Length: 206
Image (tube, rainbow, N blue to C red; front, side):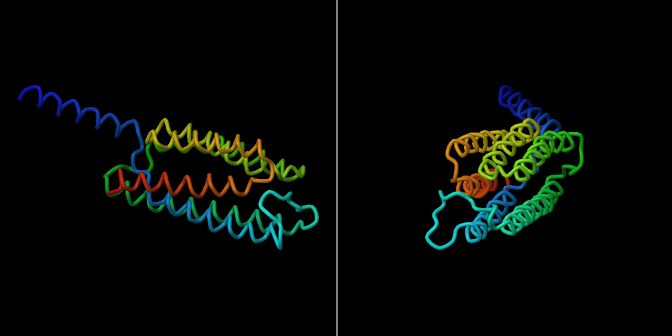
């Protein structure tokens, strides 16, 4: 009986320490929705880039059709803003339900470690686009996004770190296979997000 009581107390202490050092209010549903947004965006991008009998491995011809580049930029920006807004709203609701503050030292550390690689990667991608290196934009975005998740994973669920490692591996593979960038982008930001979000939702949001 005493051993069971000690075990319960240790579990309670462990849970309390996790709450103080980890941000555990991330919403799995927001991951699912972000993945859906990405898949819709990838479908729209595909319709803009590949026409007629062209296939997904054909070279991008953005020099001939520069307006397409602007469309792709605003599609990506729209997906990003929609995903951030969805994540913030659903995570705020979950944090309120769990009695955890949305703004704390832990959440600030999470955001800082996630935002730094994202900003650096975003600037690098803009440089690549300006220089005309369109073929490595998708792989670069996957790699830097993965790095941001690995950094953020130190301050939230460990599964976020695993998602980041998957994104990095996918980005490296995409870099080795030029011409398949949009496909890998759809898998990384779409499919992986939906899988990750579904697991998170079933495990932590229920």
